[in-house]
Length: 510
Image 1 (cartoon, rainbow, N blue to C red):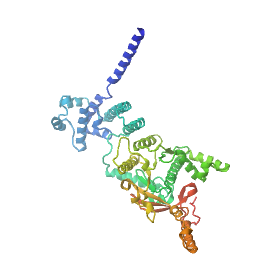
Image 2 (cartoon, rainbow, N blue to C red):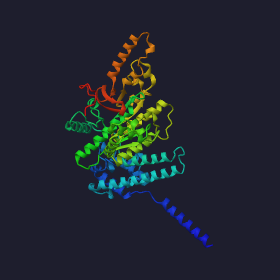
Image 3 (cartoon, one colour):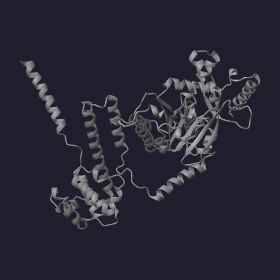
Image 4 (cartoon, one colour):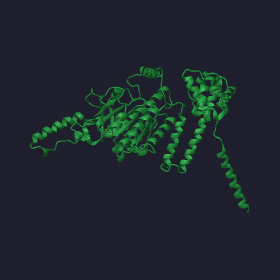
């Protein structure tokens, strides 16, 4: 009997607790809303203190919100907003009927606060709105977890929740809209001033490649750069080189500012094809000048291993982050970039490669072309939202192989229309040596030894010219010239560098 009574008591207590939770009213401050509206109606200059962060949607009372919007419309049109000028609009629309009509405006005037306090009251209203949004997001997370959207698995639900929280965290009340030309000119002047005070040709984030930086001025915020090429051309190696150089530049900039200072930004690599360990091994191989194949086979001596340890200590401090999630979705990538930007700062995003990505959760494109289009548009949106350059690697179609000249063109991009349209720059990496190796003359193809020797000598001459050389073809650049950048390529370490055209040794300058 006691046990039954106790159970009933616990159940009753639990029910009352849950009932208390469900009966709690969402955060709101009606007095602050009425006081602010009274101040606005009395002195329109109070609007200047709240206009940059407050909108009618932030008011808990819908009537108060519509009154605020009506006041804002008249003030922004350069007109007086008071009970007399607003009377006709309110009587015609019936906005005030739920609160008793025009006498409500008179009550607002009695609740007014001084213009000095208007900003504080506006922030109280906005804070209450933020709390209501948090409650709504929390309810959505709970409902989805219970199965309201069965098409989303647990990981996708986490991504959706994080995305909603990030949107709320970055909401400024009036996102979007026009930027006045004087503001745009001021921003342009700031960029020009930074470029003026910098030494060298790099205005943006360096690629680590001298001649490429000269053509582009470095990598600029909000730009989507496509790096494309056929397999075995070295796309990943070149992208890794750029990412590593950018991270090292961020670290150097922080140390120059003050010893021990942490970098203000970081570099994110989304490696959909290679694991984080493989990518790290490639960077280690390049920096330690030890073949990656020898590292994998363990064919290294004590001196080389000691060099690994020394190089690793230096590399471990770089602000470089690798995400090797296979087939990552666009929404998950966006969420992780936002999180990294919020916690460590973000200066560059590298995606290897975009054909392996999935579109945002919940979307079902009708075709592969539309899917790629959604992905490239999403990557461009990430670049603009976070104000960072995004480098996306892309595969080329096989039609390159059917031409005599294997150098890629824009039409060789898979699903080229959307990629070419959304990109601010399109670069192709090309190595003539790769194709020449496949065309080595065979003696059986010639009817005389003399002809074979002539063909072999001609082939060897071409191989010597192409040895350790690569071309980076800048086919499209929205903000600058196009052209070809000649690079040094060391196949043993899959290492790209500047090509010294002055010295015949062919090695990049130190």
